Image (tube, rainbow, N blue to C red):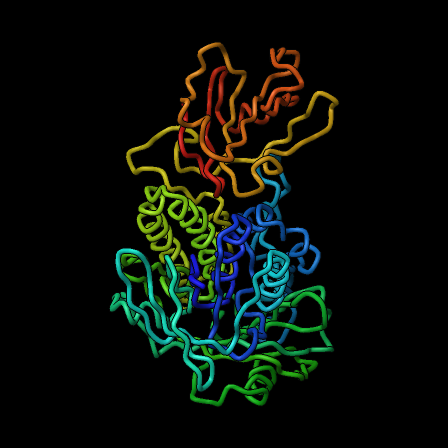
Length: 488
């Protein structure tokens, strides 16, 4: 059977793309060369914008239940406790930003939640299945899959490479992976137990505040009493529990610190790269296949998830006969990836230079300001900006969030106190599956009967009008990925 979309790589990016396509009724096949799912914390920081994506995909409750807030760090300098530090001050939710803070959940746990939701939609990841080659023509892609000693030829309309930094898809396309690798810096990351430490806190052990690279950090992982261990590796020691324990003995608290039960470990080098192109005909790159980030700032996994969220609805539109949105994937996502890669690199440089601000994470890391607006666009909330949330009420007074209305594969037309002859075009209103919502101020009659196909709601507190910088007669079309498409 011909697949509509073939996805290589079942990490967070591939899983998100498969999930977004499957909920749109697109036939998708998701393969991964690994024998089994990844087991480790790696990308454990989920940013607020990614939580909004997970809300739309129907997995945010599971992610919030399984994870935890970013912990307060207990700082030790030269083995002595000196106080508490926060990577970022917690922010209270607001009507337009319901998930304002980074959430901590080990990557393998996040992937398990996405796989479970994908299975509910009838799609199972095919592990031990490697994409080894492919060709493309005007109608689609012919790919060769390898399962052990058996090869299989499959046909797909589109191919997405979400197969990591060593991407087979990118290499077969001959797309340059521009950037650099710095072998003079090595970071050791692993998951361990440290039973003598209070699991409610994180720990930072260093010689001094301005020498963060002299020690190591332990960040508590949700669930069992495990911590993610992160430290610079200054020699060629083998990455194992003995190496971690030696670092703990050298830089840990004066009372001693015993580590045990190492379940995952890796050595990371600053391999900071951006693909020259994100598209070649019917083949697309997303996630680490398109951009590789330093672990500083917790941006890599999140950027990959949002690549997939941007690409999913556009692939579905192209399969439905409208290829115009698909042409915007590369310019939108490559621009964002380049900017976020610069942010991650800046944070890494601060850490290496011993900047006392190296551990701080500002609002720019939360990815809520991601926009696809034209550089020439000015003013509040224009095409390309993230669509804010807000709480409205129906005619019975029941609260309804805008995000509740956005959830799903459809586009949404918001009509703020529409007047006769409102400017929204027939073309916008006639989009397949479009959900139209009329928003009125308190006391303003909608003029529509309960039998109308439109959803009519009241902006009791004025938050929606304010968040969207809207006046009576303003119409705003929201793309399926929660960004503004047009404003009238």
